[in-house]
Length: 170
Image 1 (cartoon, rainbow, N blue to C red):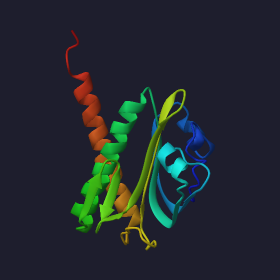
Image 2 (image 1 turned 90 degrees about the vertical axis):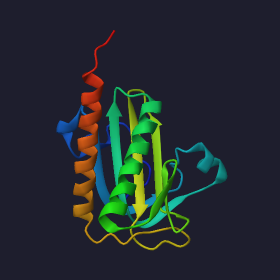
Image 3 (image 1 turned 180 degrees about the vertical axis):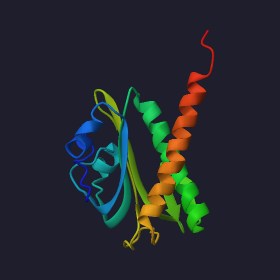
């Protein structure tokens, strides 16, 4: 699947999985990322930036009952978890700056969190083929990487929700 930025909209996943209506969702996919006139980041838009990679490992998600601040925190959690997996599973030395990952001083990833009237949307991706002037990682087992990510993410998500619910409200 390719990503153009148009997919970063409320309800996008329901066209593929109608039974997902009303649920938080997060999907992983591999494909081209080519965002030209659908940039959500105002700094990138003003600078005239574009996003292009012929092949990225990507995440796209929608989360309800969440404000943008919590969406950005969730975005950062995703970035941290991807970095941990790259380090632990592939022995890749990545660093993080905010919601971006870097390898050998070159930007490896793109990421955005934005708000709709009823949800938060998150997109994240990193290059898995060489892209001029950008960092990249050769990812041989896309499915294995995705499974590892979702195992880690779901475990953390459950842990966060348990911690939230176990405290006594006063």
